[in-house]
Image 1 (tube, one colour):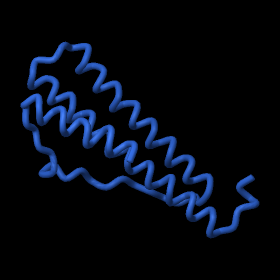
Image 2 (image 1 turned 180 degrees about the vertical axis):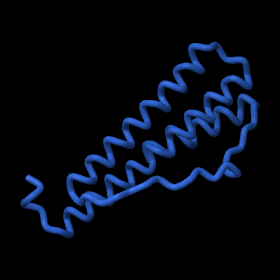
Image 3 (image 1 turned 180 degrees about the horizontal axis):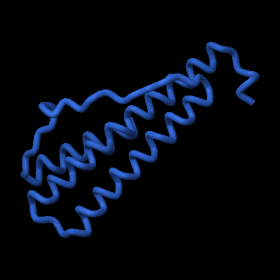
Image 4 (image 1 turned 45 degrees about the vertical axis):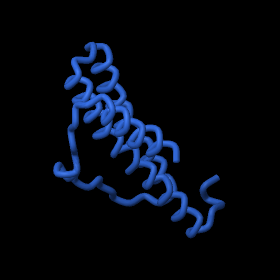
Length: 110
């Protein structure tokens, strides 16, 4: 049970879950960018829909991570703004493949 954890242990676990929530939240923008990339190369609608559905799933993941963090240390937490200047859209297949791998596979698993 959580009640058996020390305050320090609860703080560490809450911080880890909030960090995971931030990565999940960032994935929402990544999937949205991917959907735009798909449209830029005339991808089939089913692929564009799948990208949007994945973004929506990431919202749920972020909320779940925050809820879990609050089990350990309940505090108010808000995600920061997305700097729009950080979003680059380049419609070449090579850049789409690279950014998808870098943001999705590497960002999510490494």
